[in-house]
Amino acid sequence: MTTQSRKSPDAARRSEASRRAILTAAFELVGEVGYAKLSIEGIAARAGVGKQTIYRWWPSKGAVLFDAFLALTEGQDGREAALPDTGDLEADLKTVLRATADELNDPHYDEPMRALNTEILQDPALAAAYAEKLDGPMKELKKERLRSAQRAGELSDDLDLDLAVEMLWGPLRTRWLERGGPLTHAYADRIVETALNGLRHRA
Amino acid sequence: MTTQSRKSPDAARRSEASRRAILTAAFELVGEVGYAKLSIEGIAARAGVGKQTIYRWWPSKGAVLFDAFLALTEGQDGREAALPDTGDLEADLKTVLRATADELNDPHYDEPMRALNTEILQDPALAAAYAEKLDGPMKELKKERLRSAQRAGELSDDLDLDLAVEMLWGPLRTRWLERGGPLTHAYADRIVETALNGLRHRA
DNA sequence: GAGGCAAGACGAGACGTTGCGTCTTGTCTT
DNA sequence: AAGACAAGACGCAACGTCTCGTCTTGCCTC
Image 1 (tube, rainbow over the protein chains, first blue to last red):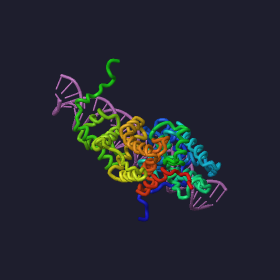
Image 2 (cartoon, each protein chain N blue to C red):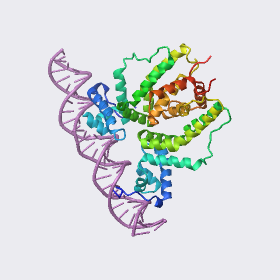
Image 3 (cartoon, protein in one colour):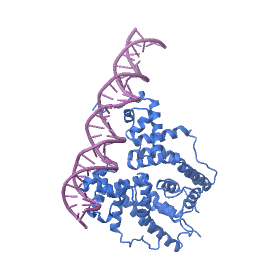
Image 4 (cartoon, rainbow over the protein chains, first blue to last red):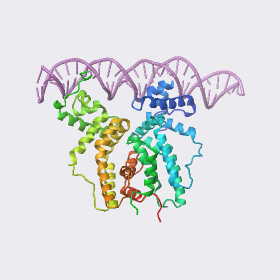
């Protein structure tokens, strides 16, 4: 038991150029041919890379796609990210949900994100990685804005913040995933109003 | 242009025995080997059927899976279905959401439903069929219960019922899809309370 | 530090395997 | 007799493993 059954690759000698070429090729290809026709061979050919180089570093097609997304987000946020906080929770939420809707409407991201979601549905390990690395940090920002509202007395103190985030962003995401209708600003606004006020009738 | 490019099969001569065998085999197989390893050839072999018989009647693997689910629901509901209506909306919703949670927890349905959802994400035509034939009727029942509550003055009249249903059942479904945590009765109850009362603080 | 060397990642692609979707054959049903 | 049926052959595409020969990298020696 002193040696591993299969030797693991030496990360120190890994080619950064190949890694980036693979992630870029994967992201572009899935947008062009769709998830169903995305193949490891296609990614390797597009990246000018041997298939073994992909199999050496990633366990699955979904893992490549995941890393491609991860590379995108790492490239932008300088950790300074925070949601707008003007003191008016309803207005701020509408601003952010409208932005989310716009992002989901962007055809450039639609197919890759749909592909990643498809993989996540089937792969628990990938789902966990997604929850931790991609969705987690964003969700924390959302919860932080809600916490601020709690401090301001706009939200009750015993609110389940995870559930609150789900009730605000969930409908948008579900409608996008299932193509249940257009993601308009009006829809975003309605979500915020309904979630904040509740379904219950108040006289 | 008087003849079709490809002859369409004669539905009157279709073998009902083969159809049922295919749907049963598809449902069982996906539960056993998972969606990733589900193949048309496997379904045909299990059903004791020629591959052509599947290709003759269904356009895709997802369509077979969809029909398998459709056959399940047709077999049960005698159209007498309605959600409980005791006059107490909150209690009724908790009852139904708890039942939904139990259903999603059933390992017998988990893998097939997950597979169907995966297909739906990738296939707009299948998504439309799902919305119309499977999700639609169930959603109508939910909306009808909410309409009853509107008549009783428990919910405001200008409520968007589609959004309300999404805010109630969405969190449960999302948590199941993404394996975000256990689907407990306590969680179901909390969803109902939070959705009905709203996120906003009230003194 | 500079040069030399072994380990191992690299691009390319051959390989056997699997499942695809189509096509062919002969049988059975209506 | 028309056509759906079970069975399975067919060529194709992609799988994941493997074998080349080349290039890069970290380390060891001087």
